[in-house]
Amino acid sequence: MFALKYKEVGLKIAYYRKKKGYTQTQLAEMVGISSNYLSLIERGNYGNSYSMETLFKIANALDVDVCVLVSKL
Image 1 (cartoon, rainbow, N blue to C red):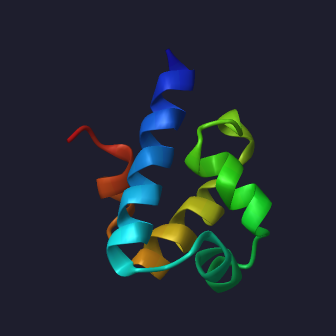
Image 2 (cartoon, rainbow, N blue to C red):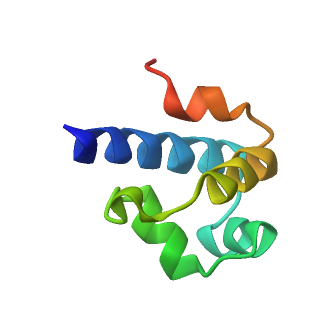
């Protein structure tokens, strides 16, 4: 069940990243993580090992409220 939630969050991050016109590399640099790590997050393959701090940094870089990334559509 939680794996699906992480996939949903990852898909939303990818959606808003593309909407802003950022590459994974660009967003990762803005957030201070590797592009490989961001790729894993977007695919939902990193489970619960990314921090809330990282999630907030991603939301900030994408100029969206973190609630948008974690809530149902």
